[in-house]
Amino acid sequence: SQTIHQWPATLVQPVGSPLSLECTVEGTSNPNLYWYRQAAGRGLQLLFYSVGIGQISSEVPQNLSASRPQDRQFILSSKKLLLSDSGFYLCAWSVQRTSGRTYNEQFFGPGTRLTVL
Amino acid sequence: SQQGEEDPQALSIQEGENATMNCSYKTSINNLQWYRQNSGRGLVHLILIRSNEREKHSGRLRVTLDTSKKSSSLLITASRAADTASYFCAWNAGGTSYGKLTFGQGTILTVHP
Picture 1: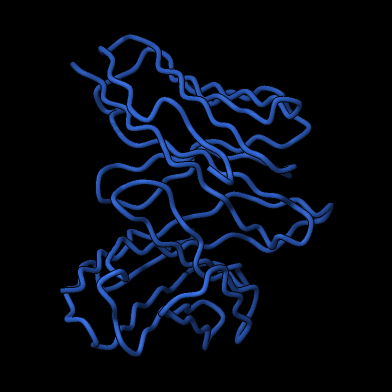
Picture 2: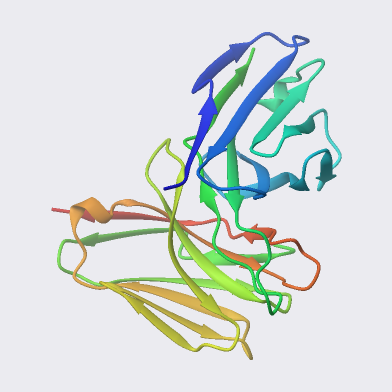
């Protein structure tokens, strides 16, 4: 069966410090991968998605970047954190597009709660 | 909102009652999905309904989709205290969207024992 891991679970960082959040998926190959941010327990905002190694698309301009060094590894980074980067970060995966151009559900990791002070 | 919305924002009911949450969106879609989130946790997929479907059931869950009105509803029947959570709809535009989802703002459901 497939599983998705995120770490760390919680993180408190000072403004201006770097950030690295990691997400790994097991039990599947060549997944689509996604990074979301959730503020105040409300809706999720898609930050980045990736359809393959080294292929990253950014959805919103921001202080963050993403990388996919391996097929099942997705990393969210920042060189200098801002207060506004605080939030709950969720990684998700889905299977690649099936025939007929249909898409499937996404499976979410447990999330990382980031507090920037 | 630019993308869509959910209502109500919060819903408080007694155990055994039914809970209905509504979702509206503004674009054409490939599918619409409903997710559940317990406080401080990741999201759990509940049900997916494709654009050519009108109704889908899964246990105590019933989802409807009206593409002409660009709306969907999630009905939870015979609610339980364990159903207390936030519920989100999310839609996929299809085409070259690479499975990307746009999420509604969610409904916070509280079921009192």
